[in-house]
Amino acid sequence: MQAGEIGAETAGDSYVPHSGNGGYRTLSNSLNLKYRIARNRLDGVAELRLQATQPLARFTLDLVGLAASRVRVDGRKADFRQVHGKLRITPPHAIEAGAEASVVIEYGGAPKPRRTRWGAIGWEELDDGVLVASQPSGAPTWFPCNDHPSDKASYRLRFETDEAYTVVANGELVEHRVVAGQGVWVYEQREPTASYLVMLQVGRYAKRELASTVTETAVFFPRPLERRVRADFDPLPAMLEVFDDCFGPYPFEQYSVVVTPDELEIPLEAQGLAVFGANHVDGQGGEERLIAHELAHQWFGNSVGVERWQDIWLNEGFCCYAEWLWSDAAGKTSADELAREHHALLSRLPADLMLGDPGPSDMFDDRVYKRGALTLHALRLAIGDDAFFDLLPEWTAANRHATATTTAFIELVERRTGDDFGSFFESWLYDPALPALPPAPVVDESFAGRVRSWVARRRD
Image 1 (cartoon, one colour):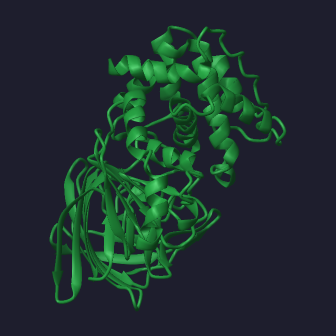
Image 2 (tube, rainbow, N blue to C red; image 1 turned 180 degrees about the vertical axis):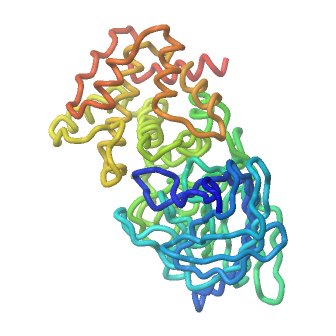
Image 3 (tube, one colour; image 1 turned 30 degrees about the vertical axis):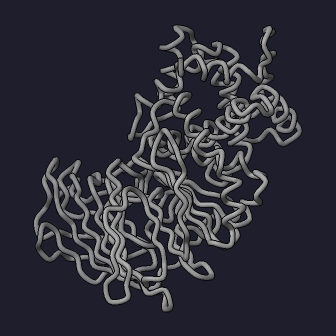
């Protein structure tokens, strides 16, 4: 092999040093899967469409805990080998730079979670069904992929399992039928999607559609939880309206929520989806902020993805701030009051985290969420409401269905305002010491009403 013909076996991201691959980008991934719940047996065929970014005599995909049995490249048998979570593929002929190639992989096994520093992630058996929660590196536990957020592709999933179960996945449900006691479900996710945001939920679920003026919206849930689910997710259509106004048009074809019968540590977002545990619904709106948070991820983290995990505050900080904006818009505690409350709480915690590069062990630390939100609130106070709320939809439009970096956000702020914000972001993102919040503006109307007034003006 000539130099430069072997694709890298990593995306080069220090936060997930063994994930992702180089030498190509994924255009599409079509999955045809059969699953036997009683035996936890998954058999699949994945057909990926790749585009080489360099001449490729060999390349790799991520696949963990499942065994490939046959690989074809452009219809011809390819040599392959699995080692340390990588599927190394040698096509019969090198792929030219810029050329597209079809890669078909037959594989199977008993899927299970991947053990990581963040706990067990990926495919997980429930008491009666399946949950997939892959952030940040669990997608290869159930399908071969280039597992890094910088690589986005369209997806098609055909999933066959026992007919008694409902299957929920990303995108539009284009087919559902029963054949010989097996339910066949086909979903198409047309918008570019990072592998960790491909989600699958299998369970005995009822479905309730919600009346939304923004997009098709539904909640899937175990029937015994219906009363609690109805009460807790009643605000969801209003949240969609507020966020659609604040952040720009909703970026996907639908939004669905799955409530599992099992308890989960945290809710989790996926492309056009979110999953909550039974412990997150109490019938009294006790976790309303989390409903807002996971919804906001559709703009921040899903449509506008991160180019590297180091910039995760662009996901979690924005979504935490969306919680505060929703509280404000719903006439509850104002964003400013919440910001000052959490600033006081953070000031009593160790100042040893750098928001713009928290490190892999702390990337999901609650301080990333809260300090990220505080950074946005401080920016809002610095540039004013009009400029701030013009900035948000401009950010989501400029990076719609793509990826972005902290540097790009800073450049947008400076371009929009015409001012130098270098020292501002240096102190909030790269100095572990917590900066002071600017004072709240003195205005006639309450600060809590300002978001509601702005939303009303936009609607007019």
